[in-house]
Amino acid sequence: MAKKVDEFEGVNFEVLFTGRSNVGKSSIMREITGKKVKVGKRPGVTLKPTHIRNSDLLITDLPGFGFMSGVKDHKQDLVKDEIVRYIEQNAERISIAVLVIDGAVFLDLVKRWEGRNEIPVDIEIFELFRELDVDIILAVNKTDKIEDSELNNTLDGICDKLNMLPPWRQWINIVAPVCAKKGDIKSLKSLIRQRLHDAKRDDLFKYF
Image 1: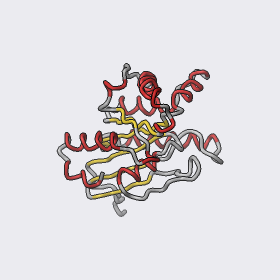
Image 2: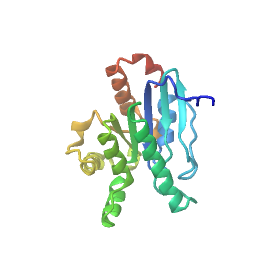
Image 3: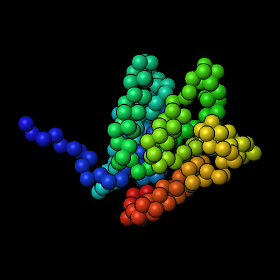
Image 4: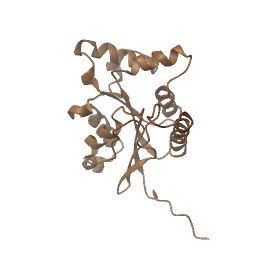
């Protein structure tokens, strides 16, 4: 019997992007890598991981979780299960995980879930990365929809929900406020590059 070929053999450094459907995850990937990745016109259009490979670097865009237009609830649950399975199976290879959230609605979303005595998937995924000891960056997208006077309070509230004691600025090595729509991803790119430098992989800068 022929040996099954591992399509990712030789990958030593994986940067993973994940997040709820329609938070701008694929748009952030496109901005930060310069590569065209599939960007859905409606939530949930991406149903399987998308990969960009450069030498021993793998950049992965996981399917969006949560509400998906036109997708039945059981299928949404299956997608979530597949995302968790991918993370667990590849945790040792994942060098950086970027969890993208919609900063403008995150706190309202958490409040709704808490009202049902449930934990939002975003928080479950964040905790999963912590449990697996995967280096995580929280990309807080759509900051253009947050009033400037409320930005710090909103970021403080987001950190609090993720069990990171406010103020948020003491977590600037993890939290990156961005606006992919305006091409403002400087803070995220800086955190990724810092991690590449710490891993002695400055050679990968050209891909970010």
